[in-house]
Image (cartoon, rainbow, N blue to C red; front, side, top):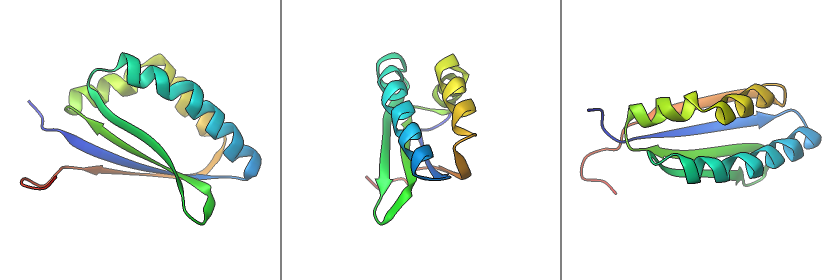
Length: 102
């Protein structure tokens, strides 16, 4: 079994209109993720101080299978497809918690 891991994803949005649409998509999508994905332990979208066109997601999954299930959800796929048109860049960091650290 894989261990718990964290994903930090940064989205750089095209402009203010794209940021507003992105935020609406997040508001519509995140409740379903939290309600329907038992393996998704934390899923927190955030703004970035002093960078109004940036968003960061902090995601914690029970294991890699839970992340694969998240990615396979039709709502997640639809979200990511639309987001591709709103961003100038996306950076994902796949992280593994260090033993003994909170």
